[in-house]
Length: 252
Image: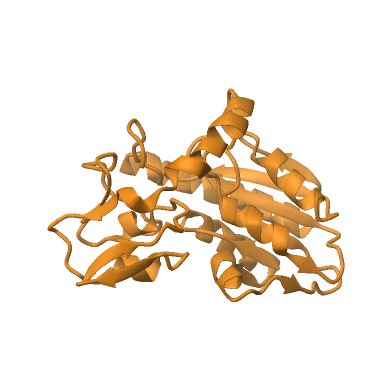
């Protein structure tokens, strides 16, 4: 059983690759949360996995909130996670481990893979070039060919790209990100908006409605930036931070 969250497709690709290798079921965390599906039962010998992007050097708050509410009839004997990051993941492993240990579960394996950057909601943040994006995806796929069999064999391992100043990034910057940088009031549309409603359909939290054909955000944003990156007219902007920075979605 594999739970995942993804906004722009990077983590979805990793989750689908793992699920195919393990012949496991995929559960989209935002959908399960909306439906109040927090109780699960693992088959005998079944692994429990999570896949998610790293947000400001930690797991997304919505993933941690979901885990906190989860209930299993029997504790997993093999629990793993995989995370995607643009460059590094800080103390993501420690933060995740603390969350599952509060449930009485233990972590068996974890790894991070670099994927093309998607977060550009602040000055100084930018997307990878097309060449670098392709290089990251190819390297990630090569890593997955090695790591998925290790999950199949239920090996215990940790292969994380921690990076520098990890404590400061995960313990100091991340809380600030969750508190201040997920403010969706900065989102707006330009005159390029074609009123297609794509933003509404791709928002994993269903945080967007349309008024007079234009998107309106309702304060429950996780800053996955799916609305921005999927917009076919590049009409959605986040303040001035995203202006002229381009778009990226996995597979496009």
